[in-house]
Each structure stands twice: as structure tokens, then as C-alpha cells.
Image (cartoon, rainbow, N blue to C red; front, side, top):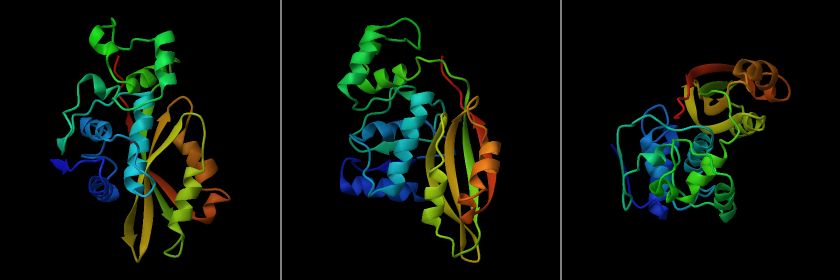
Length: 233
């Protein structure tokens, strides 16, 4: 079981950042309730000083805007944080703008059945996530990609910047890490979430990741894991 001190302190954020140095998620190999527990314990997104924590936070935030998180996880304890509520697994509480709440009031879509007083009291993040699902989307998938450089002299920071520069509708880049492959060479392992009807990972690899100008840094790409994201209705 993972454990963290107060995540709104420098020491807590530092421990979270170190924890995510070699991990894509708080526990396990897919987003789970453990990620939501940590996500909701943060009063605001981690600053860019905490590179790993910031990337993880943005990935979970994007994931929650297009789908729910159903995996149980193996358990996590955060000092000063209560266990995550069942409703928050699909719509985690966090601070959001007044505009998002106003938009929810004007045109609410209830994803879980009849509206109840308890659900009306969910924090503003719930309103934002619900609003983002008003337009029905196709299925989504979580994809883990290995991206290998030409040699040990390849600038891996520029390689990652080039990869993340690929932007398109239905593509959300997530957490990443460098993994040693031998002889001083490291590969980039990066997560992304896609809307299936909008993004083809094979086409993206063939037509964007391995052609100019990105192929200046990238030798090859492999899909390591491709998992459908279960949506809650």
C-alpha cells in the first residue's frame, strides 16, 4: 500500500514526484481509485517543478473528462485525506471555476439516473466532468507506447517534446518515463488516451511519429499495451 504525507506541502509533493518517477499510476498498471484518492487530496495541480507529478495529474484529469475510473487499486493512504467516495470515482471532486458550475445549472446531464440531493452536493469538478460528456462520444482506449531513439546521444527531452507536439482531436498525452534498454540508451515510455473513432495509433505512428521532422529523434515505436476504457452508465 502506498502512503504519502500531506500532499499540499513541499515534502508531500516531493515524495509523490519521486513515487511517480518510475510509475504511470499510483498503484498498478491502470488508473484506479488510488489515483482518484491522491488526485482529490491535491488542492491544486502540482507545479512544473514536480515534473512526474504534474504529468500524472494532467493525465488523470484528462482521463476523468472522457471516462470513469473503475479499477479498485491496491490501496493508498494520504495524510489528512478521507477515502474516496464511490461517486467520485467517475467525477472526482476538486476546485473548478464558477463558470463550470453555472453551465451545469443551466443544462445538467445526469449520467447515473435520477438526480438526488446528495449528487447535487458533489463538488464543482463533478459539474465540469458531466458537462464534458454532453456530446456522446465513441469508445476510448488507454495506450502505452515505447519510443526508441537512434542512440545514446539522442536528446531525450527534445524527443519527448517532439512526440507531445502531435496534437489532434481525441488524443490526450499522459504520464511518461525513461526506461534503460542497454549500452547507455534509454527509451521513452509514454501513455496516451484516445477516442477510438477519432484516432488510429497505427496511423499516428506511421504518418507522424516515424517521419520528418520527428524521425530525427525517433528510430522506432511499439505499442506495449492497448486497453479499452470501461465507461460507467
